Image (tube, rainbow, N blue to C red; front, side, top):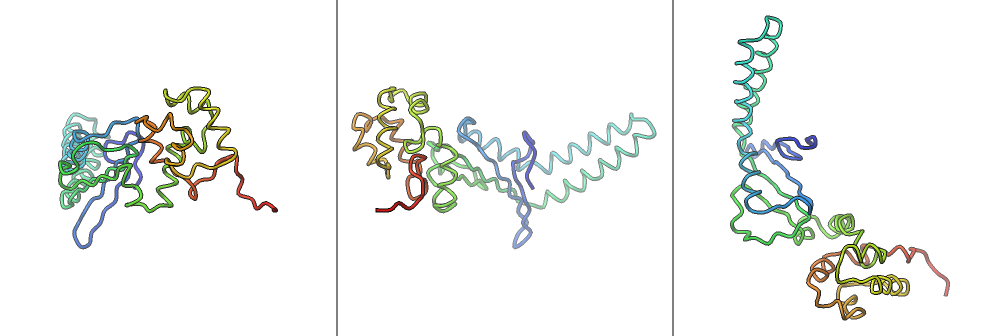
Length: 222
């Protein structure tokens, strides 16, 4: 089940009944939404209390039915009964929260709460394999990848890249493809020690998983 935007419980969730009843709640976090240990703890606690939330909703509806009109009273009672049944059902399930984030995670992994799984930027290849993870990386980095970005995109994204360097990157890319961060640093030694660039450019997809816009995937006659 894919939840609606800003839903109070998970982005995606599904039930597993065998061998044990488990409710899998998947939370997705992009770079702009900070993910740290406190966030993980808070989100998982909220997910784990889902059956109690259903029970609270049922009690509220029952209380509302006591002061509602005759026509509305029965409707509220029936709705309350549905929430009661749902709460009873979910109380039998162990809740496991999976966090998927495009961020790097810099805190101690061993402190992540029980029943939580974290798939962060540096583990995409391990969990998803090279093909899927490279597609994800492409979406994340297409506006600041040395093989794909324009000079203006690079200069607006990184303080260390001046307009002159950005234009040189564009020109260099027309005659050769950067196949790794190391190759990029060989060509632009003045950027080799910039931490922000090193952290991002090491992560970016390189051929064979991407092809720069200047290089069409066509055979040429020799």
